[in-house]
Every structure is written in structure tokens, then in C-alpha cells.
Length: 298
Image (spheres, rainbow, N blue to C red):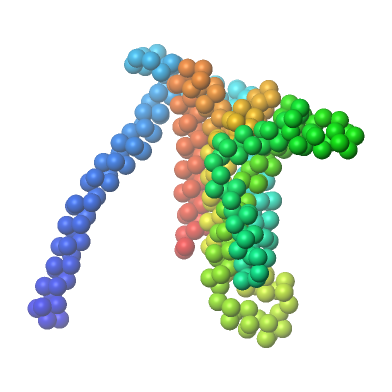
């Protein structure tokens, strides 16, 4: 290696270290202020019976966390989160994949249908909740109106626990279906078409091409979509509040809406912080475990 090459390498390393010293401290400072410190504060508040005013002084240890084990509403909220995850994984993602297979090709009208299915995702979550609150309204909503026109009487979906949960799941499927569909379309369009041609020449039928070409080539996008679906389901909040407000009888809460209603609005900030810490631990554990075992080579 010549002296000039060595000097160039040394200069490149020096430039890299200069960039690190310039850009890392501001980013690290912002990350500490807006991420690390709030997480640490929430964990600290969780050990106090605190209403949010003045300095927390009533130290109660783990009582906030232990009370969650006996709180029926929190258990129902956690169950609702896992129901949403199950519906998202078992119904929403397969439907999104199926629609992606239909719309990935450059057929007439495909772009228009992609836009139609993706538009709900662009719509604000609060707006979607308000729109469907009107749609499911038992007095004025179109669902109840259609039921009455068919002679079945009014339908008050948001007034009973099970129908209200079904209504929430319908909104979630409608709202986020297009996002996963577009992820799958992007993955499908990146697959080399020569693989399909080779499989067809070898005598593979449509199902075999899907099983042995599409799914393996799309595995990275499927894993990413599953990750987004689970994390999004755990953090669901904006749709719940305008649609059901956690009702009726606190049966449609998610963990985040439970935190807001029973922690923030009732001035039990210490209790709400403990819920936030539990949710944070669940999300971080899932994220690192999923990344470690399923996305290790991505």
C-alpha cells in the first residue's frame, strides 16, 4: 500500500470521527430528553400515589403494579389488546396479502383500487372513530337504518359489550388494511419474475408458485407487517376513544385507553405511570425477542 493510500484512509477515518463528534451529541441529547428521561420518570412515578400536582411524596412501592393484577378492567383491556392482535394476524394480514396479489400487477384500474384501499390509513384515527360512531349509531346510523328497513328493528351496536367490540374490530380492519396491502404490493413487485417463469417451466401450478416462490420471497415483508401489526395493536388508542370511549361498562378498553381514563383523567398519575411501564415492558420485550429470533438476518 502506498503512502498516499495510507494517508487517504487516515483522512477518511478522521472525517468519519469528525462527523460522529458533530452529529452524535445533539442526537443523543434529544433522545435522552424526549425518550430516556420520560421513561425513567414514568417508572419513578409508578412507585408513588401521586395526583400529578407538586412533588410525589407518598411512596407506596409496588402497590400500583400489584393492584393491576386484581383490576378486572385492566385484565379485560389486556385481553382486548390480544384479541385485536389475533384478528389482525389471522384476518387482516391474510386479506391484505390476498388483495395485494390481485392488485400488484399492472392491470387496468389497479392503481385506483390501491388508492381506495389505502385512503382509510391516511384518514386521522380520531376522524375514523367519529365517522364509525355515527355509522353504528342506533338512532341515526345507516347500519341501524338498514336493519329497520329490512324489518329487524334498530341495532345499537355500541350499547352492548360484544357488538361494541365487534364494531371496534371492524374499524381497525378497515383502517389499517390498506397499509399492510401496500407493504405486500411493494414486496411482490420486487420479486424477480424469472423465478415464476422458471417454476412454471418446471411444471409448478399456481398454488405451488405461491407456496414455493411468493411466500419465501415475501418473507421479509411478512415479518415486517406482523411486527407493525402487533406493536400497533398494543398501542391502539386514537380509534377507541371517539368510537366507544372504552364502553359500554369498560369492556372495549385497550391498555392505553385504560391508562388514560383510569390514570390521567382520574388524577391517578402514579397508577397510570405503572400501566405505562407495564405496556413499555411488553412492547420492548416483544420487539427485542422478535428482532432476535425472527428478523435476525433481515
